[in-house]
Image (cartoon, rainbow, N blue to C red; front, side, top):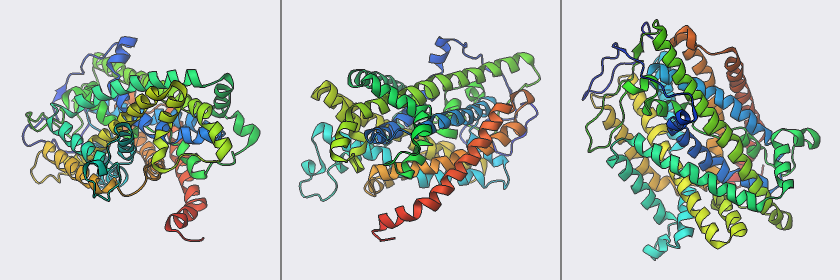
Length: 505
């Protein structure tokens, strides 16, 4: 990277960094299980976003109907998203900056960072995940808006929206480093969720449930029975985004965790702490030194192994599998009798229903608490990373800062979006919002796949360019995603729009 020249400017008037300095590559973690635990942080956050979405919202709903024939789409999604995120980690480890800052190197110069900032705000400012969390909180505590203000006409769960949104600001403002909070919180929730869902599934499910879901995953159900009746095309498209995760945004967390050049990139600190050095340029290291190249390769291997273990295998396959098995084992019988599945705000509470039915009321309450916290903690990285850091990186690389610091704009953006959440949380039911986010994420994955291929092949040293395998996967990601969403807009969107508008079409 010694020869790289970046278009982005160094940034932070309070503590400037000379981005042209040749930095030493930090010593990497060992490629052992201990090393994988040391590199868990970014994937714990990635895992938490996944569990906060499809597993809580979509999979129990699909399994309740017994419509498992399109589950194979999730395996395809895991493979192509692993390739995308791996390449984004590689870029950030080698350069110490995010994928989104890097898009300033793409023509038309200055457009793409702002494209991603606006897209993130429009897509993720609606607190769909928090919408489910506040319903769970109201059920868990029995305290509603009307309990506090009897004359209020706001939704019963709105009181908890106020509490949750204020707590987001308190956490961000008073953390010493916002990343430290995210890493610790998500790691705890990740293991708590795995343990509880595993216990529920083992008790609730019979061998035929495991087999039925497995056949859906490997595509045999689809090959023998065709497209499952009763599965809306919108839900099938959402499955192609599962297990979700954070796509290119993982690059921010690789930097924040200090992987590779991220060690020199600085952190976003709370308002009571002194600001750290932050740069929007590619940080340089000596790519002609074999020892430095070797250390950088080990950083990238460690990041890749961590991604595959914690997110792809445990989150992408095992957890989606267990949620589907539990939903089929417990909820499908009720669907067979009534023909009804949970809708609206009831959707993310399905696993609490399963837990209560399998293990008794106390387990149901415990699962409700886990669902509440899981959905709530998923909202933190949307405010912190998807919106706050993406927008501030766009300001930094395009020099639209007005002389203010990175931290100033980060907190200005996060505060504005959180305040908007006091209204946005009332706009629509969480499942509707979540479905829209899932479809938008497929488009973002397609665009990001093409961009990271170009960036890594033009910005990184020869030893770190995109492999032929990942090149094929990323092209497939781009083409298949665009075609899938285009087909949905032609076949499904007109009818959905009419339905939402209350029209006969």
